[in-house]
Length: 107
Length: 485
Picture (cartoon, each protein chain N blue to C red):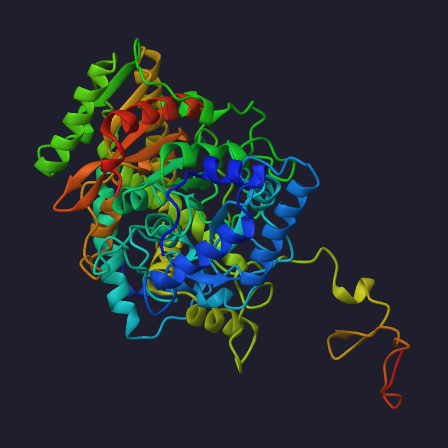
């Protein structure tokens, strides 16, 4: 595990992953607090758990992980391939009878 | 006026016999809440209440009795429920701004079961935001005060429920446990608190914090009150696949004056040299009582105990960072106004809606799950968790029936006394192990230090709640109600 040192850049990165908007002045305080907490977790790195994994199944093959970043999922086909009609990047759909704006265009 | 000194069972019997109308008992509970000022200007223990609905439900109990029906083991007994348990007539905010005004469209199974047992839900109680805290100071609606000393915390995170029982407003209350959030406030308030086995009670309608640890718990003014409360809510629920299909014992029937033949373990790691000598003395007196009651006390070791807090504070925030992702301003609760775009709306909503401790834990949880740190922190913590659970298994396999320890390393501390997050986390040092191992545990008052209650903890095998109650009943009887407040 090694001695931890959460940088301010890592706090910003983690906040972005967690969809939290931190004020710039909060970042150094939060980095210091996380470092203070994580320092107490160092003790776990000294525990021998080698014999355990095979018994409990923890991490034998590992949990499938995705990269840290946005969760954009690419489409197998472009949107246009399955959209009946599009305009300006939006799907065009049939007008509902309840729509009041009679002047607007519809496909 | 004060609440009658009747137990929950006695109250229910009086209501069922038609001797006292349930409406009168509910009126008395509201009068007591007013007398002790349980609202925001006083103890700040009750966040929401619905007097008309409560009196209506009490009138229904009275009608059932008049018609000759059995109204249930908690007939007409007033109960309060922690604000992270879903109710349909009152808000469910989890003590957070992000859920301000949120009313659940469905009811938690534990609430339905309480109502089926005849209980009257009179209010929702204050708590640390999303159950993250050990003092009930982290609520967006302000801290709850300890009824025994309003300058001190009631413990947490279920501090509002504990305060309501300790103040004599109700005999039974629901809380929730992730690392000690029922037992530690029970100890601080001089009442009984039980965390059942993981899977003993349905979590359908309990807002998730850390799903591998969360469990609904029960407060009681006495061991019997807690036993009746747990009996009413325990058992398999088809709406919660993590609830276990294990028969529920009649906990209130396990009263025993003797502990002959029982082996009670004294784990040395829970009595470190640094433990307050006066708390150690109270525990030693309890061990003497166990011997007098016919039990054998055996020194045992749970060698990985000192790893519990680091392990817990990796696993719980990691799970919380995932569970709390749903609070995004779209699906639940409040939404930030005038954000520039969707991502900005998420970030602003969550930053405005979550308090400091919740923000800290989401960041910590996201960090320990992030690339490069997952194995070192989260995977390692899961492995150490298995070691902690193995410690308990070995001790119980060696013939020990229950373990007895202090519930918390201190008595109730002054509001604002703990500013360092990790110092606060250490309040859970004797309780988080049971959550990590999934075993049941109970706290009951065993005496006082400087006028403040000290809690003793009984821990047992999975689904051995009846054994915990038997030991606790016997100790409570022997110590006398003077050990309570």
